[in-house]
Length: 74
Image (cartoon, rainbow, N blue to C red):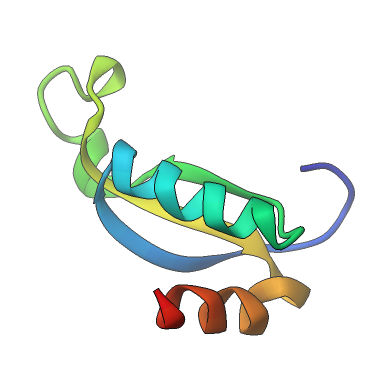
């Protein structure tokens, strides 16, 4: 994801695997997204190497409404 578009939080999920599932769904609909460790995950022991811990899924602000519709359908 590049450019000056603001990224906003779509949702928070329990781990990296759940985040990647949502990211894959969004990609099939042409919506770029990324995952990011939450503050809670950053405080966990060895969180940098762990797939566990809460992750935020971020999308461009202009894609937020459509992205919400997609994950609500799931």
